[in-house]
Amino acid sequence: MIGLISATAAGAAARDRLATVWPDRTRVYEGPAGDAVRRAFAECDQLVCFLATGATVRLLAPLLTEKSADPGVVCVDEAGRHAVALLGGHAGGANDLARAGAEALPGCDPVVTTATDAAGIPGLDTLGLPVEGAAAAVSRAILDGEPVTLRADATWPWPALPPNVTAAAPGSWTLAVTDRLLAPDDGTTAVLRPPSLVVGVGASRGVAAEEVLTLVEETLASAGLSGRSVAALATVTAKADEAGLNEAARRLGVELWTYPAEELAAVSVPNPSDAPLAAVGTASVAEAAALTGAGPGGELVAEKRKSAMATCAVARRRPRGRLAVVGLGPGARDLLTPRAADELRRAAVVVGLDQYLDRVRDLIRPGARVLESGLGAEEERARTAVEEARAGYAVALVGSGDAGVYAMASPALAGASEDIDVVGVPGVTAALAAAAVLGAPLGHDHVSISLSDLHTPWEVIERRVRAAASADLVVTFYNPRSRGRDWQLPKALELLAGHRAPDTPVGVVRNASRPDESWALTTLAALDPGTVDMMTVVLVGNSATRVVAGRMVTPRGYRWQA
Image 1 (tube, rainbow, N blue to C red):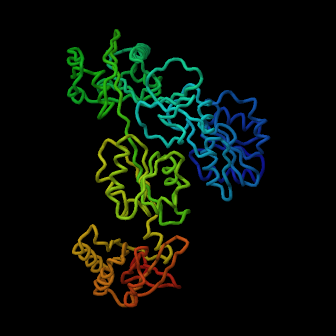
Image 2 (cartoon, one colour; image 1 turned 30 degrees about the vertical axis):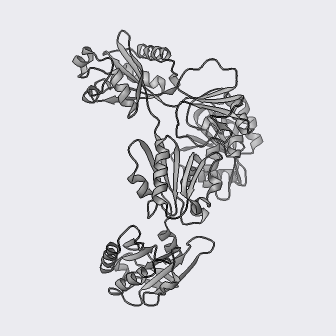
Image 3 (spheres, rainbow, N blue to C red; image 1 turned 135 degrees about the vertical axis):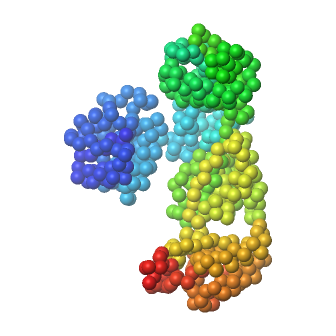
């Protein structure tokens, strides 16, 4: 919950705007500012104070305990021009809250002073992994550009680390990424704990949570593994309601995963037993559940141990890479979605067409690998992105417009198997950008057709154009004409002309939303194909489309048209 506190009429107005924008996330605290801050500090995860920073600091000072426990606090000035992340930038989420609050308040800018954020470097406490050891000292070394040795057991899909953090760096500082217990540190090593371990547990009815936790701790310690890398407990479905197992998972801060006995019975394990076979229908619970939870490529790293009423085993799962297929929009920077920008910042590998990447290089973190190529290498880029994700990296595969519309999503996902996570990030398509320039040509049913026969035989394209023409659909032509393909557009227009009047409105938009954007309204009979190229989108109206006050409009329904 986000507590909102104000002391003036102007502050209350901005406060109420946030309360309206975030109705389920916020709580307004009335009364004197001091009392309101104290109550909100005790009851909320985050605070937005519409107060001066100095006043807020004085009110907060007696309340502060420790970095990991205090809420994130953002201050917004009286004029609503700045949202200042004051306290708990990373741990309390104040940096993200300042950005979100500024976006919700017109004319407001976020102010973030956390060193890693200002430098565009991911803080060690923002990678989504528990961090131990000399995190502050190693973070400072990273910021100062000092060599930091990276020692990672595996590749995890986190954002790019700066170039001075490498496995080959012979530095005085070390960043370890491991689920293994390490020797005591001399203050030069930070340790990130990946969620790599699945602990399988079996139990007799009525087992106590304390017994389960003790056995888990002993099993991990005997294998030299860290409890902070435990991703989940796993067991057989018959034990899903076992109170001791559920309480143990709750105390560990993880989920309890359950699997049917028949699924566990099919898993090959080193220590099968007749007892669980008789009780729940599988010869192994702990080992089989651990391996099942670990998924493809998982390995057993601690065989079954027993206590009086429980069994425990540990498997290590193979990291799953992450492929984000990102649409950059039609060209204008303000049509690049915030989600697309976030995905570019979190990627360790960015793959795309060189001219598209030129538009967003400032959003790519220092240290990210940029794999770019020219026109005609779409399938190669798709394969590369999938291969990098399979290697465990966080990958952004970028395309213009929406990556799923005549772009990179199709070839990438056609070759992506279940061993990677895939995220689709929608973008504003060229058709939508062009339609917005022209007016409202897509107000009723419409279809998009690419006239490029590089991947689709012309016979198929012609059949689709004929179908759209006879169905009276508004048609958007992508890839309408190039130097080597100059006859397809005239042919497509001829097919449409067999079903539509010569004065049917046609819109032609080149470089929609870009600085050199140009557009024209013409008719089906008057359109000159020679004015069209690959940077152009052509929209042909249907029988109801009209030009109204210089804008192309397709009525939404025939009642309105009548």
